[in-house]
Length: 71
Image (tube, rainbow, N blue to C red; front, side, top):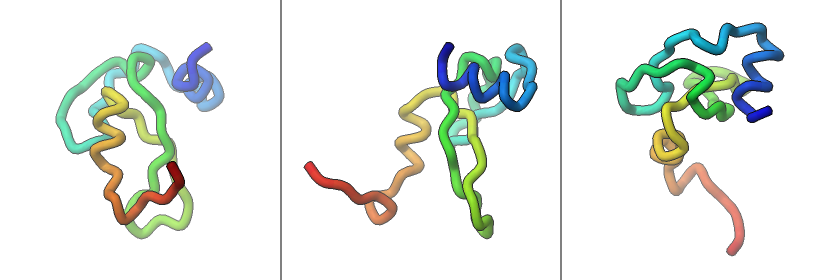
């Protein structure tokens, strides 16, 4: 089972529900074909699950100042 399907099952969301990408595009898609990633909405104190049309749309939201890590 994919991560997205696990999230849908846990939240009892119908997999054929058509949604708009949580990224900066306007693509619509069946939620089961999307990619679930946690996002922190402006003014929120904890993240919620966002559904994106592709991993690229999620990565496009990340700004260098919001990332950390080592190579």
